[in-house]
Length: 351
Image (cartoon, rainbow, N blue to C red; front, side, top):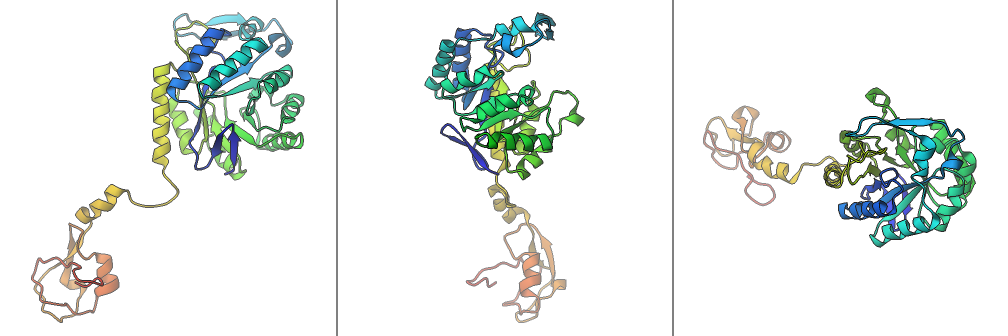
C-alpha cells in the first residue's frame, strides 16, 4: 500500500489511522459553535476536523427542493434545501478564523468543496488536501480545478464503479493533482449492499483507503479497521438533541471519545502480518504442552522406542516432536523409572 502525506502526517500502511471529526453539518453555520466543536474534537484526540464549503445559490439549480430529516426528540423535520444550505455558509473571514482555530489546537482542517467557487476560497486557506463528496464525482471541471494545486484528493466512493475510480485517478493526475485517498462510502441500510470487501480492490490498486460512516453503527467502523482502513471519520455534535439536520446520528463528545478508544484498541489488536504466539501463550507452553514420560522402567543403553513412552502435561520436558525427530534409536543415557519425565539437562541438548 502506498502512503499519502497530509500536512505533517503520513497516512498508510504501518501508520496510525488518521481520525477526522466531521463537523460539516453539526456546526450549523454558527461560528462560535464551530469553535466549540473544534475544541471538543481536539480534547478527544482526533487528527483533523472536516467542514464543507457551500454556497447554496451556486450549488442548487432547483430552489424549490425540500429535504426531510429525522431529529432525536422533535421527530421528522422538513426544510427547503436552499435555506438549509444557506444556514451553513461562512464568509471568507469566518473561514480564516475557523481554520486558524483548528490549527491553534494542533488539528488539520479538511474542507469539502461543493461548488467551483470553493476551489479558490479553499486554496486561499492553504489547506493540505482537497476533498469532494460522492455527489461531486460527476463534476469533472471542479475536480480538474482542484488538481491544479498539486495536492492529494480525498473523496467518498458511494456512486462510482472501479472503472470510474480509475478514470477519476487518471483525470486528477493528468490535471496536476497528487495521489488519491479513497473513503469507502454507501447510502444504504442493507448490509448485503455495503461491500466492505471493496477494500481488497483499493489495496490491490495501491490506494490509501478509509471509511466514512453514515450513522451510528460503530461495529461497521471497527470492521473497516480490520479491512485495512487508514482513515476514519465520525460525525461529532455537542448535543444529539439539537433539532437540526445531522445531529441525531452524530456522536456526542463522550461517545466519540469511547469510539476512538475502541478504534485504537482494534488497531492495536491487528498486530502485524506474521504468525507467532503471544508472550502468554509462549510462557504457557511449559505448563500445557506435553512431555515424554516412561511407561515402564528402562535400563541405561537400551534403545529409545515409542512404545516406552506416553505424553502428558506439563510441557517443559522432551516433546513428542523431539522424540520422533531426535531420539528414536539412541540409547537411554541412564536408568529411567516408570512415570519419570524425559528432560533435557546437559549442554548441547543432552538428557
